[in-house]
Length: 230
Image (tube, rainbow, N blue to C red):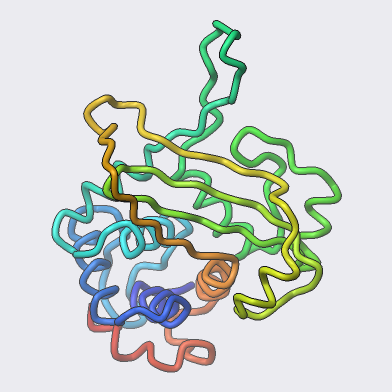
């Protein structure tokens, strides 16, 4: 299974990020218990979907490594609530948290199959078939400085490369949409400026493929050796 160095290399390459920055964030998360820590080289800890989700949150929700562990914890706990009419006085139920949802998507790309339920919604046979045929896109968005996240599930006509113009021409309206917000009042900070970072199935696919690799297998991540020094 993949090591932290392999995961760093896979994410940096998929998202076009500075590998040194991703490595710094990974190191901070590992020191704070958000990424498994054990040895180096072939004895290094194997990465799980939880480790991968935490690193994806860290590199996409935080511009710097300082304080990233606290931020990852806050984003993991963001909740998606059931949407009700304003006239419905019943309290809305929590459908799921962002951290668990992101882990489920990473595991789906590792195993090749979506879970039976995703953020409280049953996955239909048609949706499962489209996923296996690589006809679904998952857009994961991170918002700051006001904490928030969203997951948009869209069907595409065919498995397109990361070409924005072609993607926009082929994409259909969302099949599913989930908005995750903090429940704690202390985290509900509203500002007039919103920064949004969005990743898609291409990053999820790269991470899922990475997690299936054996430690030391560099066939899909040629630059992994440089980051095994984490």
